[in-house]
Image (cartoon, rainbow, N blue to C red):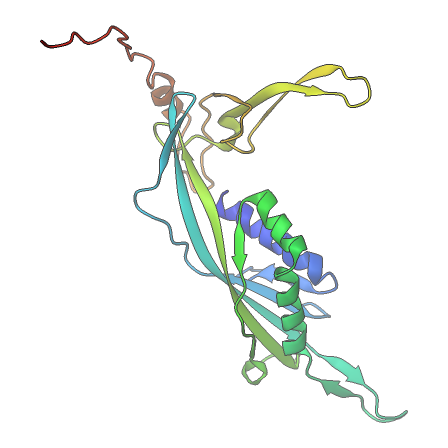
Length: 239
């Protein structure tokens, strides 16, 4: 999983719960201020080992980096409006901490556990939530609460140069139609690189938006392990 894919997944999960709030990562420029509640996600630097485990798949090395990062989740809200009586200004109740604790319960639910398993990530929820209402300097909101979670996921570096894109992974096989019992072939690219139906790795490199990587590197991938000679003759035993 790439960092961009992780950010998309976490935003979708947060938006699934706070479906009536604006959910965004911090430092996003040119965004209008929301009229309702706001949830911001702030990602800390990613930590991963220098020497990751390496597995040979279809004759090419694939490095698996166990990575982790912390995500700060901030909730900005105006709380619950309670009208004392008709004609009087409503009183705003600070529900930011309660609302964030309810979100923490959602993250600890079996639903989110299964959601994480499907994406090969893990979320660790802290035991406490902080009320940061006193730090608000925005007239749009009255209350604020914060929680910091830890997220664990796996990044991959595919191929001899470690630059092959996920589309290099080819899957193929057959599936049985449950109604007719007929076997039908299927094939697709990307997905789980350790799946049993991975048929081959076809070198393909997609340059990064900042200009890193290039298609010429695929030429270095083409000959990897192609000249290895296997000697299966038994070694002569010494007397």
